[in-house]
Image 1 (cartoon, rainbow, N blue to C red):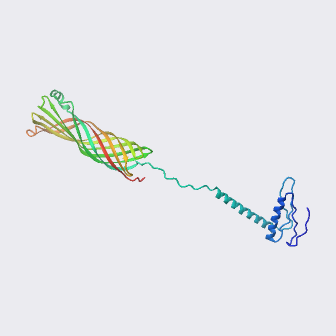
Image 2: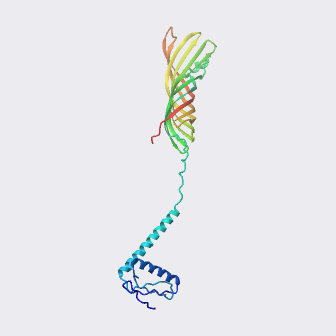
Image 3: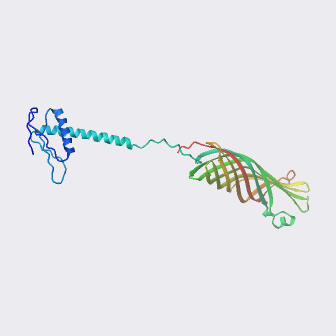
Amino acid sequence: MRANPTRATGGVGCEKITPCRKNYTAAFVGRFEAVLQFCFGCCPMDTTFRRQRDYNCLLFESQGCSLAHHLLIVGVATTIMAAAGSAFAADMAVRSAPPAYSAAPPAYSAYDWGGVYIGGVIGGAWGETDSSDPNFGVLGTRVGVPVAQPTFSSGFIGGVEGGLRYQLGKLVVGTEADITWGSVNGTSTTNWVPVGVLSRSISADTNWIATSTSSIGIAHDRWLIYTKAGVAYAHTNYTDNWVGGGLPLFTGADSENRVGWTVGAGVEWAIWNSWSVKAEYDYLDFGNRTVAINGTVLPGTVNFPASFGMENAQHINQFKAGLNWHLPTFW
């Protein structure tokens, strides 16, 4: 290494930089020294460059500078590198930020059939009551009493209903109760042999019908198709009048509450968020029961009290149209 004369300014002698074989290394070191001289007024350290056998690198060796100068230089260099790294990272973050997307429109929601509902129904009902008199036995058969005398009845009905449904996907299950009032009545008359000598008239009048059912259905948005089954109730009034030769032979009446079973099916359409209309058919079967007809023999003359047992097999059909209000869902 070739020594150089000491600089007049700076206090501590410094040797000039001996360039290594790589010109760009000497240029970099020269610029770095110039910056340091401008900042501190002298060359902060004597530096010697070496080129090792297998590596092209720059090696600094300090000879005359103090430890404070070294620490100061290292701090300044570290700060500059940290600031540059932060700016680079911020620039990369800005460039790599994903584009903003607008919110997707809300998904379409199908009508919810779940919850509590109440409403009213109107319609019509028709039925049949088959009456027979086992007490007449052989005598009844000989005089021409029929085995069973059918009585067909019909009438308008109207009432109220309410229920609760739960929807799981397209499946809708629930329970419902309804009661209707009306006059589903009819009368049948049978003439025995000889014709016109002996006749019998039976009437049946059902004035209220009620059901308590469970239902299951399939929903398609605002349409619901369902079936139902459960317990049926009805109250029916009966009359039984016998006439012979134009004179009343017996007049009697009775009433009963009957319990049976019912099945039905219907379709319902939600015309508004809380309102729906429906159409439904139900079949009600009350089985065969014996009714005690209490009356009077030869009314108006003898007035002898009597009671006869009459077996009735009853079933009713009904068609109803309804309007339901669906209460707000609280769960």
